[in-house]
Image (cartoon, rainbow, N blue to C red; front, side):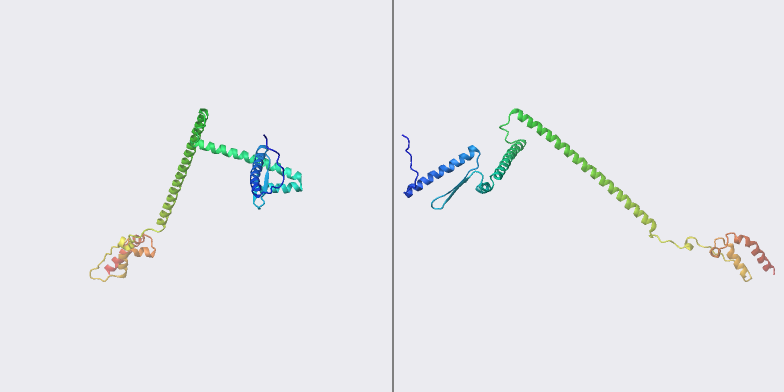
Length: 250
């Protein structure tokens, strides 16, 4: 036997009314969820009990559904356009989520994890990719090492050039300012002057004779100080000797 038809009217018994409310509310929310999934519809349900308690369900978010509801009341065409745009964005978002999941799985496989679901061909392809990646890493590493070596060589050359420049500057400074560890001796100490005393027996030396003795010394500093030529004393020697002989004869 099937169930009889129930008259739709307010239930007078409070307990029966509460039980019926709970059962029908659960069934309504279940049907709304199934409708949203099966028909790809945006469904929202809002229920207030006789005591003021709120029960709700929304397949896309209650605030979003209410906002769409308000827009549809003002201009149904605009609401449809917005709905299509939102639906397209939702599809793109789902597509991006799938791509992210695939990339995460690929990353785990490259790290050697989650390999149980891979076939032999997929494992061989993964091995080839890893070998190619390792070769690229080695080439990049070698390139960086060569660059560092070249930079070190250039820095060494610059340091050598700077040292050479500083050495030349020091040598130039030493040339301008000679060292004075050994003081320079006076001229007379380096080249002493030999003095010869000419004594005349039983006579007083005359001024001419004294001048004769002074002139006869070729290395005398007096001749140098007077600015006379070096052969001056040779030319004057015969005259001085003749004058000296005349004095003796007198």
